[in-house]
Length: 328
Image (tube, rainbow, N blue to C red):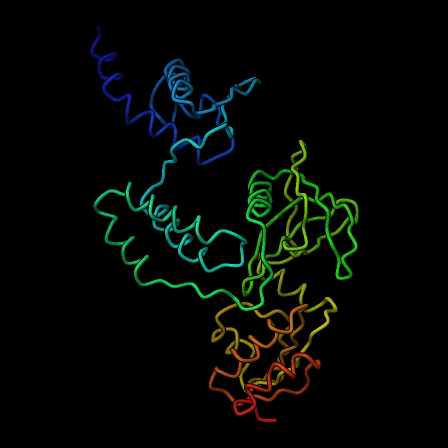
């Protein structure tokens, strides 16, 4: 046996782990890219792929000029490779998911967190203990429940730039079939929204995830279109501002628009109108009166002079408990 062959076999366990990590990090890899990343020949890559298959990892070969590989979903969930930062990020996600609006996920999140704790290396256990012991997620009151399976399908199609279809219920519960290019999922105060380009209506749309049913990926993939905003959160904020929702409020604050944005913890569901160097007006609009109430309360806590100029009926009713904090 040559020295090079012996070294290759000694490196096999670590190389298989690196190969698996690469396959999990991206949808597709060419054989040339994998060989270059691993520092081996294309023949060795093919052998390592076969070894992963014997361990029940469903790796599919892609035909074409260069050839390639992708990791598919299988009958069983194989082990996942996470680096240190990813493992802690998953832990944070599991803790907050236990108090989220995703239906039926509480117990599953706790079980998954316990499993993660058992397999973590010793150097990460103190960090995970700190996460689990000091982090508490309070569910957003009144937030609609979201099906976790539907949320996973939407997220997968966003990641894989894959066209999808679903039934969408409007405000009157009338359903319509949508065929969209999904771009991003955004959550605001416990509510989930999908930003997507609607092919049949030839325009960008925002969909409430709790109103989406029967999401299904289509075989078509698409070239991502530029979002008409700097980022998904800004696009969602602008859509709140321009759409006509049932619940509204208008608040004047003795802060400049920049000062207000610097102090707020999240994007507002509405538009900020500058009123000179030391004042601005906030136009809030949303389908949920509770959401509007939460943001008015957040504005009231900014330690700045403000006034509630107007609000829809249900918003005013919800704000009565805050009367001593509101100057009207």
